[in-house]
Image (cartoon, rainbow, N blue to C red):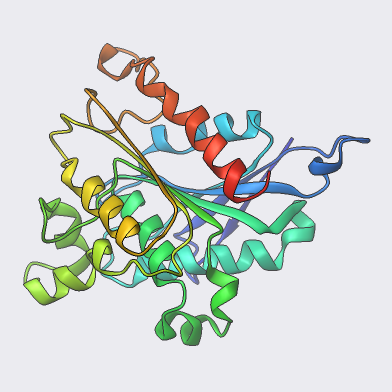
Length: 268
């Protein structure tokens, strides 16, 4: 395996770490692997390391190439989304170099990173993105999305900190509605896998519920799992040093479930 790092903005404050498995002679899919682009959470204020490389390793084990994105934080909208969109554009343009199939690229995000992943999944064809990056909408469209205890709505049980960072202290209901992803889902949204825990005290499970409902209303393929309990930021559900609260073997099932979902909709 090789690990490469490349920047995605002019001041090199936003970077992508690419985990590139080796091709295996005689195994066809390893020549052009499916891939997953991971956006860790952090309330748009920082990047959570537990939701980066540990997650990438799970998908590497399943045969995926993984990209972990350290996008712009403490920046107002649309800075993070431009980072996300440019990441997809750059990865697709370098598909041969990375040994990936450009038509099998999923987006995955946690918490605020789930909101960012959901923004890309629902706004990939917005004119402001394609004009800013001088590309076609198809260059930016994820082939599937995995949203992990995501921030979704600025109206229904919003995660106030995330939206204040994106919109500023003077945010109004119109701005919140514009960035509420349940309002951005269309029939062109790619298939979506969503999971959360029912007792998440940081990002209410209502966020995941309204997103699943919006997908159903727009006939977008969606798989939704709500586990009974587990703290926010649970990531791969492994025990954290000094804190056993994050160890949840039953919730860890989201990993194989999501891999099965991606395999179905990306023909892996």
